[in-house]
Image (cartoon, rainbow, N blue to C red):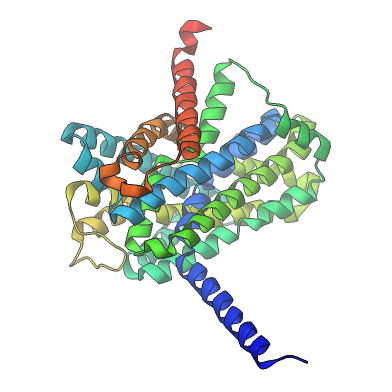
Length: 422
C-alpha cells in the first residue's frame, strides 16, 4: 500500500522531471541548428563524393571530428552565455580594428559562396522531383526570406529545427544500401593517410563542411539572441553534444549508402544529385527521393541560417542593431544583409551552366582553411579570465581544441605547398 509520504515524493520528483524536460525543450535549438546546418548542400555533396571515391576508408575522420565539433560548439556557446556578446563583437572589443575587419571580410566572402552553394542544392533537389531551378529557387528564396525577416525568433527556430530532423531520410538510405559493417568498422578504427593533394583537399573539405567558421558565429549569437541564462546552460550544453552526434551520424549513413553501392560498382560522382540518380538503379526509386528530400531540407535550412549568421557577424562587429525579433525599422542593416544574402545568391544559383560543384567544394575548402583563424580567436577569448571569469576553458577542452587547430593548420599548409613539395 502506498503511503502519503510516498505519493508526495512521487509527485515531487514527477514535477522536477517535467520541469527539467520543459527547461531542456525551452533551450533546445542553437546546438541542433548550428550542427545540422553544417550538413548542407556542400556537406551532403562532400560526404557523398567521399563514400563513392574512398569507400569506407575515411569514416575515421567522422569519428575523430565528432568530439572536436562538440567541444568547439560548446566553447562558443559558453562564451556567449557568460558574456552576453556575440563572437564578432568580442573580436572587435579585444583585438585591433584591422584584425576585426580581416576576420569579418573573410567570413562574409566565405558565407556568400556557401550560400550560393545552398541555393544550388535547392536547384539540384528540385530537379530530382521534376521542378526546374527557375521555378523552385525563386519561390523558396521568397519563403526563406519571409521566414527569417518576418518571423519571431521562436517561430523561426521551430521551422529550422523541423528541417534538420528531415535528415533521418539519410539513415534510411544507408540501411537500404545493406553496407558491409565489418568494412565500416575497419574504416572507423584504422586511419588511412595520404600525402596526395586530392586526398588532403577532400579531408579539409570534409572538416570545413562539418565544423564551419560561420557555425561558430551563429551558435554564439543564437544563445545571446535567445537569452539563454547560465542556470539553463547545462541543458544547452547537452543539446550541443546531442546535435553534434546527430550530425556526424547522418554523415556516417551517407558514406555507407554511397560506399556500399557506388564505390563497389566503381561509379564516379561529383555531387549529391548525381549520387541520388546513381543510387536509383541500385536501390530503387525510393533512394532518389530520400536523397532528394534530405538535400532539399538541409539546403533550405542552411540558406536561412547562413544569411542570418552573416548578418549577426557584421552587425556585432560594427555595433548595428540585430536580432530576429527586430523589423526593418529597428534593424535596417541586419535585415538588409539578410535580404541581400538570400536573393543575390539565389539569382546566381539560377544561372544556366554555372559550375555549381566547383562553387560548392571550393566554399567548403575555404571554410576549412579559415576555421583555424576563428578557432584561434575563440581560444584566446575563452582562456582570458577578464572575459570568462571562472568559466574559462579546462585542460581537456584546451587540449582537444589546440590539437585540432594545429593539425588543421598543418594540413592547410601541406595542401598549399603540395605542388612544390610533391
